[in-house]
Amino acid sequence: MLTRNWWDDDQLHHQFRLVDRESGRLLEESIEIHTVELAKYNGSISDVRSASVLEQWAYWIKNSSEHTVEELQELLPGLEFLRATGELNAIREITEEKQMYDAREKASLDIQSNLIDARQEGRQEGRQEGRQEGLQEGLQEGRQEGIEIGEQRGDQRGKLKASIQIYEGLLGDLVTSENILSSQSTEELESIVANLQKRLRDRTS
Image (cartoon, rainbow, N blue to C red; front, side, top):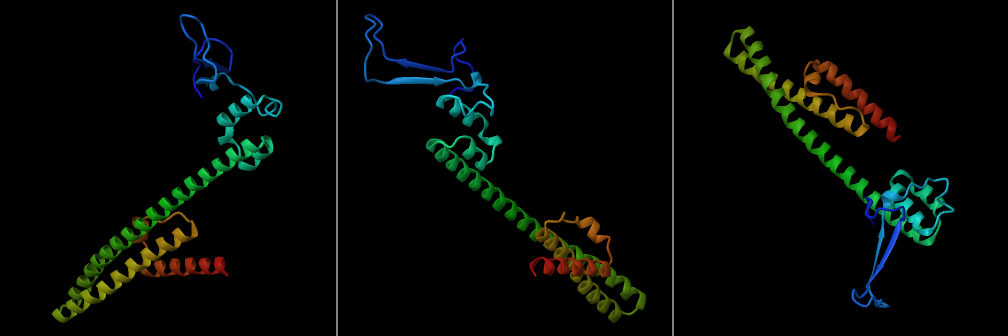
């Protein structure tokens, strides 16, 4: 099969056999070379049913990607075409499954990375909040207690933000960026988590 024109004519198929140059004697029952120049085939779906088998194969090779399996089976019901279409469908399913697997793996790695980042950022935010609360009380004990409280709150915010991104991924929503989530208050994050959990429960019920 050739995707470009090889011979300067309109003939789709050429057949070559072994011939002695000196005598012109043809070597019977020997190797044959066939060329099919797909670029010369311009058949449409309207005339493929009445076309020759060779032309039908040319149509199948050039246009199978534009049809569903069901359309190809109805259009070209011959046994050899049904087998080829079945193989094509198996290849498509493997390719789609591989793409879905890769997408799930990437999403899982992204979520894990976001969870780690969120926890680290949350602890950092918590320490800052805790220091501010501790300084306001003016006592060393208050500062330490404030830092601990802040860390707990920061870790809670990190978990809430990670949960939101995980739930959004499960629901097929656009995952909210870390910057947007960081701008939300803890109460707002809790409200978003509760709403996403409800949507998941409604979907599975």
